[in-house]
Length: 256
Image (cartoon, rainbow, N blue to C red; front, side, top):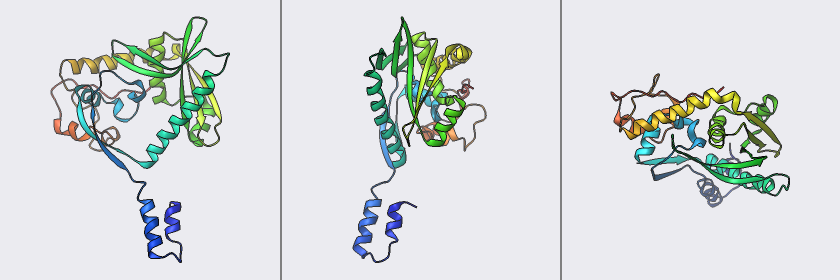
């Protein structure tokens, strides 16, 4: 129960005071917005998350479509908090005289088409090392701290950066949202060379389907309640299109 709901149950409040509390509480509602989505390239930050793993979703993104997107107050708050902490950490990194780092470095690739902005790219002895900043709750942070294993969908973002920069290594800087403690987790390209080949091959296959105007058939194992489908802003359009006779492209697998 929220603090506002607890306050609303407080005895002795007048009807007007209770209404004020209700009106305040009503401010923090889910927001649904209509927008046009039209992508020209893959965004690694969304590849391993929800509909980002689905070839049909990317087909609709490249084709261009109008969607309705619902964002909860909690999600909006988390995004704003994460963005603010990125700014703070990037400021400290850029002010370190021992560290040659480019902040918000644009990264692009032709085939498959990729466009992204790395939180940081460290320059050292002619080599480039991408760095990504991630915030996590205490439980998630403690798991990273104990295992030194980044989240799988985070690795899907960093791996393309390392390929584009021809990097031997990349880094994750995780910060605990609660106490601002930090850990740095290195990722070796050699450990993910095979996965990088698979990932880039998957993207090329998806983009080729779009260029040939062949909407992929539903992925193997699709169910009416598949999470990747239920949470997709393309759910309605996808099911109106229905299955096709075109080859299916299965969901993107995540690295171990």
